[in-house]
Length: 311
Image (cartoon, rainbow, N blue to C red):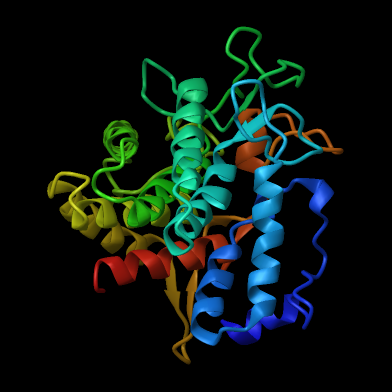
């Protein structure tokens, strides 16, 4: 971890290729590593780097109700992705540095995006929400994008189970997050493919031409179900579901080559909304984004799921 982070952090604590003015939530998540390294090594450069991320969050651009913009170039847009990129760090920081106000911010971000993106019929969450209704993909009434992307909901599920690690039992927002985790988990079960025990790239359109069982989302849900059950947030049946889904991941996605190299296949490399190059958020957009082997967003959740299940 130290070797990796030292590639990005110089002796003065400056972060390579980091621009505060971007207000980019994707840059926040590595702050978790900085907290760990600071406590293990005592090197001040990690604290200085971490403080830059905290300063960004204190001034993060946001909608009138407080929802963080995903980036400055995506004005008024909340993405499910961004909840994972920021909330576990804020929760860990609150715990390690005795600043409980950050826990309140975690609760606000998790509850706000569910409020704006949850489909009342299916219980699934749309990928993103545009408070301004300015994007072509945003619904005129709800502001939501039109589809339920697997990995976006995977980020959200992992955000909840990881952030909860740092909430004291008596925090008023803890039960709110657990309730969201429970109802979202139930919604995901309804779109789990019955034959494989896995999840599709576009969650509610299994079997439609072009759609496919996707590795990163399946691993993320498996991890979240396992951890949620192990921690007592979810019913113990979710641990059994996670076990069967992990077996399905091994069968469907894992490839062991002749020399023993293990690879994971059928992971979507990237998908997003908005930006300088317009991305339509259509069904065709999601199923035609590039996919393949060993993308880190599949590898990481696979390892987390394996660890949580002791596999």
